[in-house]
Image 1: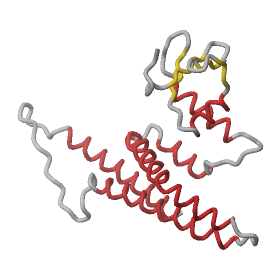
Image 2 (image 1 turned 120 degrees about the vertical axis):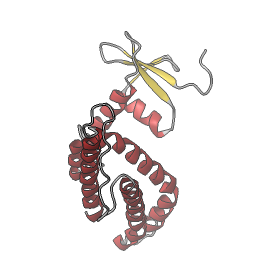
Image 3 (image 1 turned 135 degrees about the vertical axis):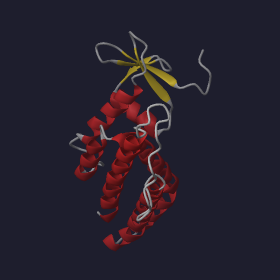
Length: 203
């Protein structure tokens, strides 16, 4: 028997059917989406190989939700374009942490934002100006997240006007240290990343 705090195991079969081993029932992607909303921890495994395919299944859920004709898209086209542009970039490794921290910060503020939303829509006369307070909170949280990321990026970039450090000589060959070129390339990549983040903050 699995421990109480262990995640529920969902097995995915070759016929694409999903089986919840916790309830011994077949489930759908919609069921898994509801489990996420209820904060129920689960992992999805390939029934044959046992590989963890949670990431691909969660991505599939998002795809289905984004393409639901009765739903509302949450991912703006501009965000999708920017996200795609980061794939293959040297700074790709930084993006997941930034997005995760941003969503965590947003989640911490959601209760306060919900209260503001309830106040905005709880009145008999629907005043769109009532949306200003919660929207300002979203904008402020986004601004703080971008500033946090910008500050992290500046830790890796040289100060404007700062003299370049001379490349260390290779003690064995006498040639310039090849790592200096790698460092230069990394700084250029970070500078490009900074420009992208700046454009996000201005939009």
